[in-house]
Length: 128
Image (cartoon, rainbow, N blue to C red; front, side):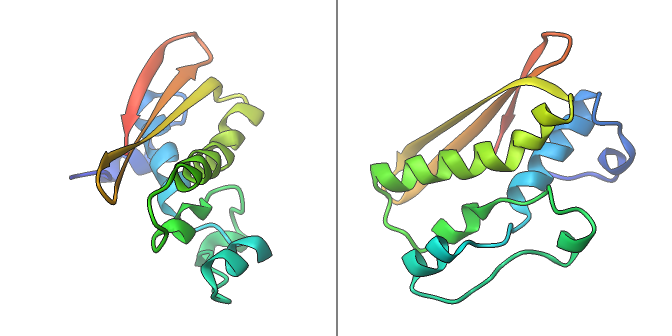
């Protein structure tokens, strides 16, 4: 599955291509784990990326679920982590609303998608 292309790097967030790139970067970059995450994982893995000091709003704690059993609680955490990772888009005025959908696609495989409502009211789906 192809997620990134070079044109998206320079596309403004106000365009669909730029917004899709912002969503994917926000979700697929590892956000720093919390103490609760470390306790749940039974690891002291901090996570985060090299860019945390420059751009701390981009990143998701979704990576902390990679070894979790797929339960309702795991699906709920995944949804929350994605919503948290994308909240900056609303706070900074790039989107009006964000809907996150998380489901069990197959045994031990999570399905995820996001619907973004742009400031002009137009909606579009970003499959993850």
